[in-house]
Image (cartoon, rainbow, N blue to C red; front, side, top):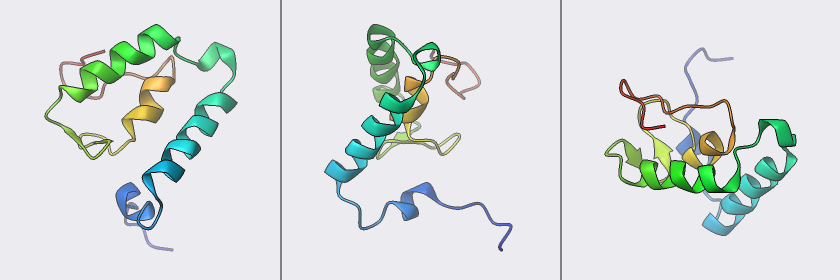
Length: 85
């Protein structure tokens, strides 16, 4: 096994945007309620991410996460030096 980190974007090649969004929704739906960000805060987080220059094709260039996943977890935070949320 290689010690190189995997590229999340490359892992998603060949998967339609619709399929990706379904997977994200399923992941967020499966989170226990005490780990989920409430809907209002989730939308605020996504709005802040949308204005960030580090966002590229739904991925955070600072940490490599899908922002839709990260924003959905209550205890997650923005990885920027000056976090946006």
